[in-house]
Picture 1 (spheres, rainbow, N blue to C red):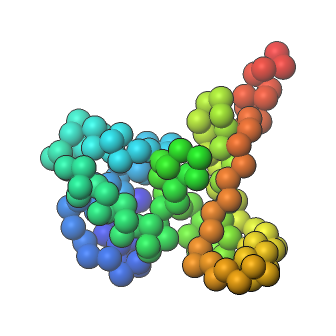
Picture 2: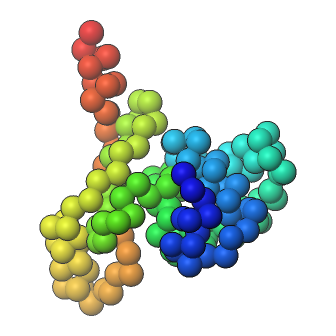
Length: 141
């Protein structure tokens, strides 16, 4: 992943903390808490303090670079950033794997539901909890 290019594409300043957090999230490949990111940076780079990590995550969330899991609060890189509209997460409760999906029809439906009650959404991420295909197969063996 070209971290400088990603930051430029989202019109974010290219700073060491932002590059380090992007690197951590891309290498972890699983949702991470701010505390987990702090531990990773301490083990792999110059340690970032927790306040810096929260600020970086806030900037990334505003730009759409990351998603926050509704049920855990952990964050992960958006893998479908080129697809505007609704993004959803399929979270395996057994192994922790998270798959992202994009569904424009679901986005339209959620916006319609919100408008019916006078709510104006800025963004939304749905999350389905369950068991991934690999865990389902291993359970049946």
